[in-house]
Length: 214
Ligand code: AP5
Image 1 (tube, rainbow, N blue to C red):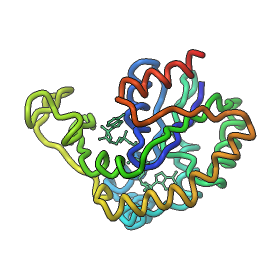
Image 2: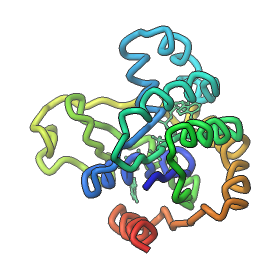
Image 3: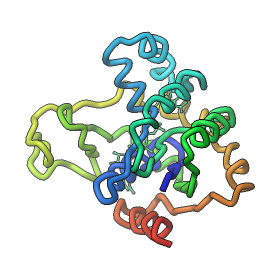
């Protein structure tokens, strides 16, 4: 089963994708993670993407579509979760071609419906384990033992450079202007399922499970 998780910054796409990886053996294809990896390694793609990401704007369609194409080949025999891709009509069309070339089809586009103001709080409080990437939050999900990752026991944590309020608001504006308009494209195909993204992580997870098992 191949699905898209769609929603503005902080809607919980990454959180829910990680859970589906753990519970269903699906593979998470996050263009944000791929780009951050490229930036950290200083690859040509990373060098092009760094300033764009820090400004909260969208990286070029050609770059992200190429990244997805490369990673899709490692998904044979597994369902793919597209997290943060597609983000424009052009990317949606590119995805259809990439899937078709591999005899895959999209099963669901799950839109996480959220309140943007609450998302600013979610995003600006977010931090992750510097070692294993486990996700935490200053208000909603602190490590059980202060300063120690629940998953791997590591003691260092990091925050994303684009998780400040000003950049978050630009990212949201980009979502409204360029990504939300792809919903009608998928609605026409009868693929859109809506989930209330303002519930707890467990409630959102249960709603997504009901769609995947339905
Ligand atoms: P990307 O990494 O995709 O960021 P994003 O879409 O802005 O989404 P986030 O990762 O911020 O949020 P999320 O929805 O995954 O939420 P999360 O689960 O972490 O993209 C970053 C940048 O890369 C873009 O700005 C762009 O420059 C570039 N880029 C990436 N893809 C691109 C593309 N396709 N085209 C062009 N450019 C691209 O949750 C957020 C927080 O809330 C966490 O702390 C979490 O613990 C908490 N939380 C989650 N769910 C809940 C809940 N139900 N209740 C309470 N707290 C919750």
